[in-house]
Image (tube, rainbow, N blue to C red; front, top):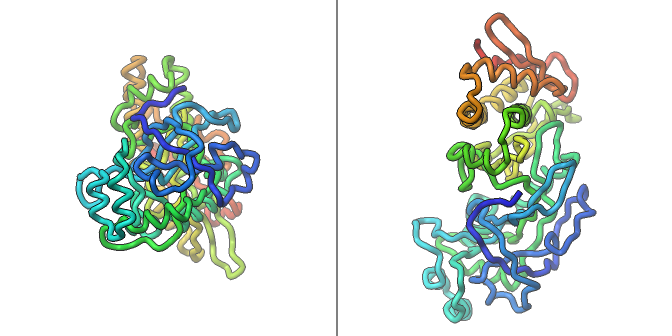
Length: 389
C-alpha cells in the first residue's frame, strides 16, 4: 500500500543522542537513527546532510514515508517523524516564510542566515512555548519522554488490547540547530530540550481531524485505499474497528493495579482524542499515535467506577461517529442491511468474543458491556449500556 498525501522533502542527519525503546532495540536502521530537517533550516547545521528523502505530510508537524518500512505481527508499518516544523504562524493564517520568521529574531547572525538562504520550503521548528511541554512546530523532551513511557507498557503494539503506534526512538536535534530555533519566537521562549519522535504507524488515515484522509470526511477514499472491495473484507474491517475502539474506551480497567498505599492506578488520557490522535490500520484496527497524553493516574477505590464510566463517555461519541461513516459506506457499496442497530449488535458480539475484559450481556431490550479489570476484582466490575434495541 502506498499512502496518499502532499510531498515534503526533508534532509536527513545522523542523530548524535537519543532515547531508545528497550522493547524495539533490534530496529536500528539509519532512517530510525536520524533527524529530519526541512530545507529552510539547513543553514543552521554545520554538517552536510546524509541524504534527501521524500516524505508526505502527516498532521501539522509530522511527516511519514509513503511506503511500508517494517512488519510487526503481520501488520506493515510506516515510519513517521514528529517535530519537523510547521508551515503556518500559530497566531494567524500567515505562512512561515523566511521573511516573516526573520522578523521574529533579534540576533543578527540568525537573521542573516535566514535571509541569505533561499529555501524551497516554508516550514520551521520554532522556539515558541506551546502546549506546556513543546515548542511550536517541534517536540519537547518532556512530552516525548511521556510518550516513550507509554510505549514501554506495550507488548510490541498492544497494551492488553489497546493498540498503539510504537515510539521507537526520541532523537535530539543538534545543539547548534536548537540554539537557532530558540531565537524564533513570538512571546514566550521554550527552554527545554527539542527532539524528534521516530514512530511506526500503520497508516496516515485519522478519524476526523489532522489528515486529508479521514473516515469522517471521506470514507469512500479510505475504502479504496485499503482495498475493501468485498462485503467479507468490510465485515472484518468493522469487527476490528469495534474491537480496538472498545479497548480504547476501557483503557483504565485494562491497566488497573493496586499501589502499596491502597490506591488504584491505571492509564488515562490527557489532551489527546480519538478523532485526531489515532490512525486506522488497513484491517480496521485503531492505533493510538500521539502517546504524549497517556499517563498513569491514581484514584481511591470509591472513584474507580466513575473513572471507568467517564473514560467510556470521553470517546464514545467519536467512536460511534466514525463507525456510522464506515457502515454507511458499507451499505452504499454492497446494498447491506439498513438496520443500524441489528448490524452494530452483530459486530459488537463478534468483536468482543475473545476480549477478556468485556462480556456482552442481554438485559431485555438493552445490550450491556460487563467491563472487567486487570486485577480480576469482581467488586469493581461495572455494566455499561451500549445499545438499546
